[in-house]
Image (tube, rainbow, N blue to C red; front, side, top):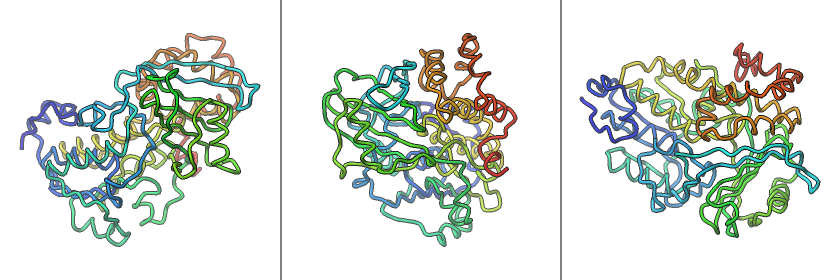
Length: 416
């Protein structure tokens, strides 16, 4: 088989020699979980002419998803970037404000403005529904409103050449193995779509750090509609989620959502699994997206990382190198999560002055490049000797720096 559709965002990333010689290295695949990571896996494997079955436990027509609606790296999603397909707003920049607290007496400790060349604020449920329709048209057997039991999941390894676990966290593979405690950590977040006056912010988006272990946000979809939310680290949860969400909306001038409009979800932190766990060679099971624990442990951003993991898996399948998936995934993600691990120390240590200084220093870098190409952020930081002196004088930050660059972090730190 020759893969020739270079306009496809997955096919275009393949090496030209791979596009000329790509062959079905397995033949059949089952993808369990039909959100962004699962859809990306189904799309990419089908582009390689695999026979693909996709299971999604909910109906796409009824699925209410408004988490992860600010999507960076959107060019990797093979859909027209129009409102009909769920792409509501293309923000020119993401603003990040760091405050000294979450009370009326707070002051601004630092600010970053991060240009956005390839990001959209979306109606994610529409994006997923349209993508599911497209992969079905391309020949994927989409079985929505169909859950998968642990017994069925075990049997898939006998029925298919490749099993893709895109079930989120804790993943189906973790449930089957009885290892649902293997993540290094996660965040709990509340969010809702609200209507109100966002004309002062639109078309930009806003993320706020307010000197607690978490953050809040407003992602406008228009001048009168936005997704607003707040998240906390798992070991720093408030007594009353909803009241804390209401307080965040009130202090930041956002409309307060009805309790019935709220969504609650968890954000995994980083590629927390041992790389050996991302690929089960004996049973041909690969974990992608949240099922592999992939989300930036500082920002919580995970859509582009999820798509990247699925496309990487399919790319290696085209090269008959599936056994390299775990190590390649870790190598591609580790620098991003090293930076996130280090910077998150300023939150955990209650140092808005350091976090604000970091935002001031790295302001102006593309929002996707801050995460995916941390060399740009590091190059900015070394130009700020006063900030570096603060970092060097802070035991938490020094410890995290040492951990990050000796790989004593994430899963290794958790299981030490």
